[in-house]
Every structure is written in C-alpha cells, then in structure tokens.
Length: 513
Image 1 (cartoon, one colour):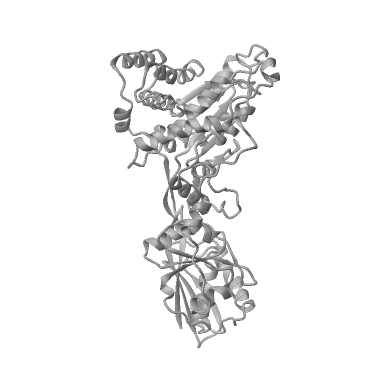
Image 2 (cartoon, rainbow, N blue to C red):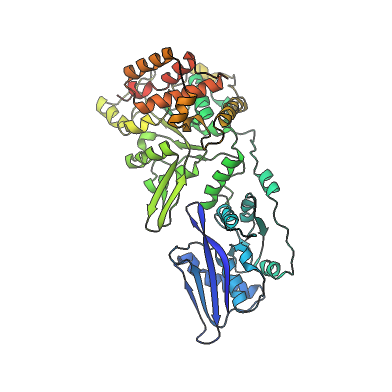
C-alpha cells in the first residue's frame, strides 16, 4: 500500500515542500530502501523510526518497503523526517487509517521511546504550509511555539508518535496553538539589570557616537589604546538598542530557527542578536555557506549587532567579504547544492588599537612600533571597507580621576528611550518601504529626506575636498546627519547636525593615510 505525507526541507532560511512516500509490498524479501538524496542523518532515521514504532505499541514492517523523499534533486538533511516517515509507514502497513492526511505538514525527530524532539526551521515550515494552503502543521514542542507565530495556519503540538496517530485517526482532540498567545510571548521585553551603560566611566564623545549609531543603525569603528573601554562599550550596545518590531522579530527568529539556535534557547524572545566572533573565524563562518548553504555570523546578526574586536587581526579575506553585505543588507551564496539569498541587515561595531602595541598617541605610554609596523598594521583594513563604516570615533585612555569617580553615567534606559524615539520617526518616514532605519536609505530617499541648504552644501563640499572623501562617504555623512537631526527632533538638517556628522568621518583620513 502507498502512503504519502507532506514535510519540508530547509534551503537557507526558506522551506521547500518534500513528499514522504512509503510503499509496502507483501511480496519479495523484507527490506527497507530509503531514496531521495538523503544525508547520513536521514539514512539513520530508519533505525530510530522502527524502534519508536515498536515502543509505541505498533509492529515494524515485515514487507519490502521503499521510502522516497521527493523531489529527488533536493538534498535532505537532519532528523526532521522521522515523524512523517513513521506515520507513512503505519498507513502503508494498514496500522492507521486517517482521512485528509494531505491537509497537514508534518515534521519532527523521534526518540527511541516514540517521543518527539524539536527541529530546526519551524517558522519557515509554517510559512510554507500557509503558502500551499494547508490546514496546519504537526510539530514537536518548542518548534510548534515558533510556528504558531505565523498567522493563517493551525499549529498542533504533538508530544509523541502515538499522540500524532490518535489525532489523525480522530480519537484524540487537540487544540491548535493560538497565534495571539505566541505573539504576546514574543513581544519585545527589555530586561533591566545586568550590564548597563551607566557603568561606563567618562568617554562622553564615545557614548554620543554610540547613541547616534544605534538611533540610525549606523556602522561604528572605535579606535583607542588597550583598556580604554572599547569592548565594554560594545557589549553594552544591546542594552541601548530599541526593541525590535514584530516583523523584525519574526525575521530574526526565522534565521535563528534555521540555524537551530532557538531549540537550544540561545535566542531569547524579543531581543536583538549580538554576535562577537573571534578574529580567527573563516570566510564561510562569517558569510555563511556549507554543503547546503546556511546562515553565517552576518546573517545571525540580522537586525542586531556584529561586533568585530581587534579588527585588523581578522583575515583580510574575511573582512573583504563584508563589503557587499554591508552595502546591500543581504548576501547570496552559491554552492553545488543550490543558491540561497540570506538577509544580513546588521549594524557593524568594530574596535581596534591605533598601532600594534596599542599606545600610539598615548601620553602615558611610549609607542614601541616603527612607522613601517604601524603602516602595515593599518593597511590590513582596506579603504573600501572603511568607506562603509559611517562613524569613526576615538576612544582615548581614561585618566585616574575618571576611573576613581563614583559618579554614574547615564543609564541604558535613558539612551534607549531617545534612540527609540528616533527610530519611531524613521519608521513613519519610511512606511511602506523595506527600509527601517536611516542607514539603509536608498539614493532616492537620501535626496528626498536629506536635502540641505546651499550654504550647508558648500560646507560639505569643502569638507569632502579637505578630507579627500569618496562619493559613498558623501551619502553616509548625510545619513548620519539625518539621524542626528532625528535625535534632536528637527525636521531639517541644520549646520550643527552636519558638522557633527562630518566630524565622525575625519579619523579615516588622519589616522589611516
């Protein structure tokens, strides 16, 4: 007898329909054939499935059984087909008679006892089920909670193979998970306590630059000697970032779900991601890829922060792959298994020393580096990459009086409130477009929303000529000026806003050339 269930395969962060077909034939030698381009984890599913079937009170097939995962040209990976294979086997061997199995998309890993375990990519599967017009999904716990965030499709949580069987044959009634409850659970929640911006001593100029960067999602480079607080500031940036909108949260969650981070609980509800890879990371680890292309660090930082500490220590090739994603907010990866496009609209925060020893320009320490060493160190960062970093800010060493001061700085909540107000203005400004922050403005939007008076245009031209800045830097100065104006509640870009934005571009020429 032939039985079919619908499941899915992950392609990047999207899901593609996979039909699990099982055919049991009485004649011939009892044997199992698993076809359809499965990987090692899928091939191992036969042993898990047969043991789970026996421990759930059913008998294993004693016939010649063929299991086909169609379409055959799509590579299947992971244990997500355990549950649909088990259900199809039970139908093919006439141990289960269910009506309208085509209404459901089924996925889930099985333990040897028959209990279900969570899987990756549940959010993408829910979107696929809605697109295909299916009634709903049968998924394990945690995965079902993720899928329930998608409206327009019913999601049922099944804890075991036996429970799934009883639901499909109609002897057990289950209540679909409420998308309203799931969305309320996923609403942005800012937790107080822990790391806070008030712990940062001094560094008023750096604090201001961080606030501007966060308010417009601008890329930031901090330059200063060891111990000046660069890493400390970077790790507190998530505490001042505005809470993600529901659409942003769903995009974040879909990426982390495909990477399996929601299963392990690494990605909390209602938070923006913060990724800080070590400088030994490979190009593929940063950009994404693999046999079946998956998200890398830049995609895992989507709508959040990618922090690169000790920027010149990263491999040159790894840094250069950032250039196109920083410009476009997405990255296309081509492999033999296919091509995927992954979103990566992240805020780049980077930190570096002014020289290899770190003390160039420090009044309290003598720099031991030769001019050649300094030049070689700085040249590890290319001009095109620097051009894509909107704000360059100096982080000088703190004085002893600043370190001993008991006066607390401004709290994260106060900075976050101003950044949130600026982001709200930007969301209204860009309503109806895919742009969410000033840093992502297109050329047309720059002309429309960053218009300046002729006198300010002359001022900007003079600065461009003196600093030898590029055309890309021209646009980025206007974007930063627009954000500074938003923080000040100004509809127009005024001279102070433009001058502050220009100031944030001066270091890339005085320090690097």
